[in-house]
Image (cartoon, rainbow, N blue to C red; front, side, top):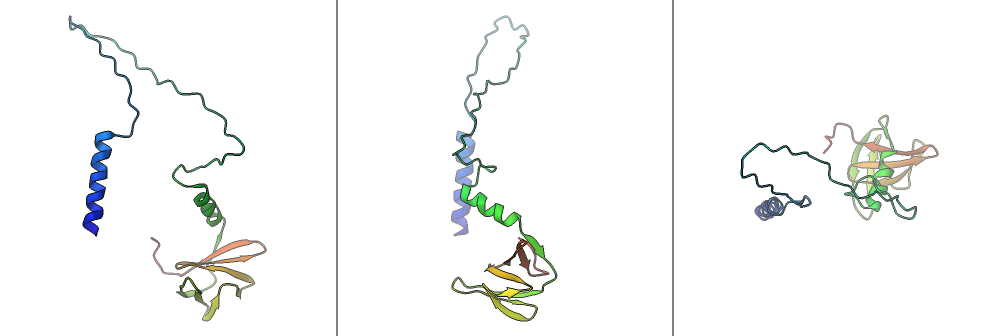
Length: 144
């Protein structure tokens, strides 16, 4: 399987090199039979006028993400990391995950330190209270 993925990646790179990804520009050839030095001036390409974004269109900051994916990232960046609780284990299951926090077993919907457990993910727990959302991660686990 890894050989197939590698071969596919190599073929894609070769195609990218052959066809490229830049716009083709017209090249002017000037013949100089006398072989005298010719001065040329470089000019910036003319840009199309920029149109203002329409209010109903979604303005994205990352062209590689869909609006849905950007919304997911917006939600994760506003969370505060909690380090005073000790998350020692996560038992992840799509049907019902559980976590061991400070020696007690919790599931989604339970209350820990006056914060409600919103979601238990394979690598972190999302909590919420009146002030906002928080993440709780296991200490000593290396980040990817």
